[in-house]
Amino acid sequence: MAALAEQARHWRYAELPGVDLLRARYVRKTFVRHTHEHFVIAAIAEGVDVFHHGGADQHAGPGTLALINPDTMHTGRAGVPEGWRYGAVYPSPELVAEIAGETTAIRGAPGFIRPVLDDPYAVALVHRVLRAAEEGNALAADTLLRVAVTRLLRLNGGRLPQRAVRTAGARTAARARAVLEECLVDPPSLERLAADLGASPFALLRAFRDTYGMPPHAWLTDARVRRARTLLDSGTAPAEAAVAVGFTDQPHLNRHFTRIVGVPPGAYQRERKNVQDPESTLPVASGMWQNR
Image (cartoon, rainbow, N blue to C red; front, side, top):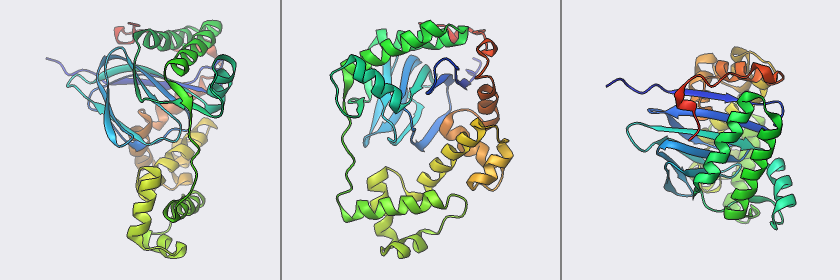
C-alpha cells in the first residue's frame, strides 16, 4: 500500500484581513510546543489530531474542531496511522473580539472554553470559508467566517481570564521573557539569565515552564519563528530572516519553522506574495481538499 502523501498550504486572502488560512494532510508530522498570536480554529475532516493542551492530550477526530486561544502552548501529532486531514482559520484576537461584541453577550476578551468541540456543522462552515477564499468569493468568505466564529463562541465561548502575575516566580518568568524578547539574536545562557534576575537556574526554569508552558529555550525558538514570519511577510528573503532572528543559517530556520508553522518558510512566503491578488489563489485540484 502506497504511503499517504503529506500536503499543506498556508496562505492569506486579501479580503479576509487579520486571518491566516490552512489546508493540510499530515501523517508523520509532529508539531513541537508552540503558541499562536491568533486563535486556532481547526476543523478535522479525516483521521485524528492529538495535541497537548492544558496539561493533557486532547483528541480531535472527524466532525470536531480543535480550538486554541492566543498565546496558549500546544503541540500536534497524528492519532492514527493514516494521520489527519483538516482545514483551519486563524482569526486575530481583534477580529474575534469584534464579532463577539456584535453577536454575543461575552464581555471582556473572548475565548474558547473547551479545546475540542464536536460540531460537524461548524466543521463544514470552516471548510466553506476556505473554499470561498480559494475561489475568490469575498462576500461568502467573510460571511461564513463570521457565522462560524459566532456559532463557536455561542456554543463554547467565554471571557478569557486575565493573566495576573501574582507569584514571585511568575514575576521572575515575565522578566526573563522580556529579556529574551530583547535578545533573540544573542540570548544569555540560563545561568547568566538567572543570575541577572537573582534566581537559581533551576528555579527560573521551573517558574518559566509553569508560567508559559515551555522552558526558556523552547519559548525562544517559538519567538524567533514568530519574528521570522513577520519578516517573511514583509518580503525579507528566508536566508536573511534566519540570521536576523538568531538562527545560524537558513536550514536551521527551515527545520524549526516547519515544525511550528507546518510548511517551509519558502512555501509560506510564496503564498504570502499572492495575498494582494485574489485571482492568484490556487484551484482545488485534488480530492483531498474536497469539503465533507
